[in-house]
Length: 248
Image 1 (cartoon, rainbow, N blue to C red):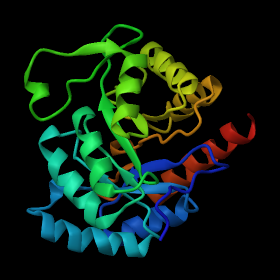
Image 2 (cartoon, rainbow, N blue to C red; image 1 turned 180 degrees about the horizontal axis):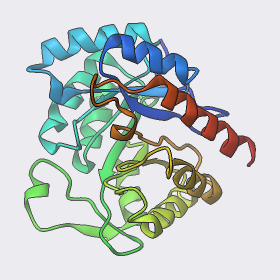
Image 3 (cartoon, rainbow, N blue to C red; image 1 turned 60 degrees about the horizontal axis):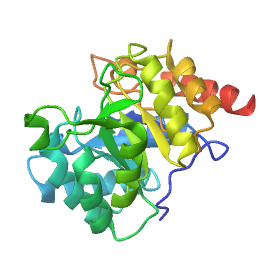
Image 4 (cartoon, helix red, strand yellow; image 1 turned 90 degrees about the horizontal axis):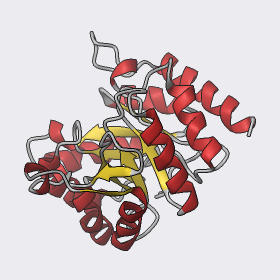
């Protein structure tokens, strides 16, 4: 069982959601394995039922599951950590304050654990008060570099930059990409990414020299009628990934 995501050319791994186990298998195939498939903790009533179902997803797709919060919901932070401990997935989504707990409970350093930081409207500054309690207080805003250093102290792997709202915070994102590259940290752009802006967002990270990029593409490629991610769109995204990475 691999604990490490399967990056295309050791650089990029997609992150998409699955509406069902069959959908998970379909998008995994469409991405040629270069994907971690999000399964949201928020969709389960309790930890035992989540473990039982998520374990089936993991078996179906060579453990390429990404345990999700559910729209960055800080109230899911503890549940995600408890699930990660048992399931040992390839990828874990966390709020800023939850990354250390997830890493400690995982008991290994191979699984990618991200930490959610948010745009502030100021280039070079990010909001880190994204936890269940801290998110209810006035924003804690610090430099990107300091945020990365704290996350390294806690054993996190990457910054999850959310909510990007597509290209709205593109200048801030470009700075975050540069800081991640300079400080040997992974980057996960998230929020409002679609087939139109995906290439620009990915290219910024690659041009900055980020070692590993895990872009999250969610609602824009989900069929609203079925709730499933469209495998054809995942195939399109992989084509863009290959073009961008191979041209570097």
